[in-house]
Length: 167
Length: 224
Image (tube, rainbow over all chains, first blue to last red):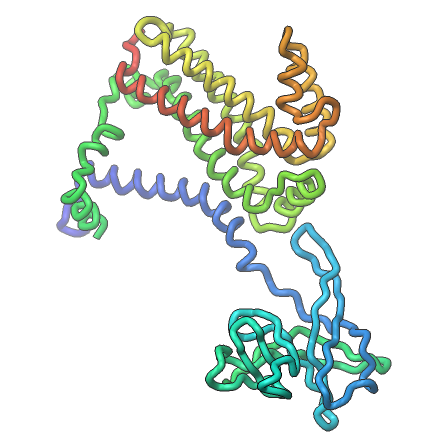
């Protein structure tokens, strides 16, 4: 036992605060966990999605490939269409996300007359080279995301776009 | 640490008197269950308030997922109850709490009635209490429709016909509530949501404030 005596008033105030805190936590914990649930939801594994593009049709010139998939947004299911810029680099296929790494606008291939053969974002004049590397001095700070790809029955399948580290 | 923050604020804003007005007041012996166990009957008003606080909190959290729209209402309730962590608990708190508020309020009313605590000078507080009772019934009625299941729909159709039975103004009251002459549908649901989440709680806060200010002004009625 310590020498410090706990007064009756202190004891009551500690126990009442403790019990009250416990009850308040019991009430609030479910609500808070309920509210933060989207943050803690496990991310669904990325399935490969079929695109209407035949791999044999791809050239070394980037083309826009639109693909549609079923998106489940809580209680709402819908068909969502996204796109990719796809070209052949030797044997490899490069599929780049069109989402600008600056603020998320959509980039276009070869649409800026002053800077041909580049990806161009019209929002803030962000530019990327053909392999998706951001050009220093333009707003984007990271290269365009890359889709993992698969070939199946001659058609191109794309996974979930992944960010690249190098600047 | 907390004491220091309190002192810092208190030095500038002098909040101690406010705190004293709210929390520091005499509890007479005859209402203290530690002295007379039968004094627990005085707890029902406070319990009504406590459950009301739970209703407000759980309701606020439910609106993070709920959609007041005939296409999505049921789906969103199903989702929040079955897919979201603790959804069943939070919705359960709101569901059972709704009944519990009415039970506690009824017991509180019985206590005040049988002790004659409504008599002069407390008549006005009795009247405000009865108004709170009606607001709570309104909250129960409007909240019942929101899950948009069969039970909700048909209970509301019955409730609307009860409102329609009011002499002279009945049909107007009914249209005002349901938003359409004949259909109980999209407009009814949004109206009930607005009434349930904004209008009635607003009225409730005002009435509760009046209820509590009057208790503090008049004090708790004396022993029998």
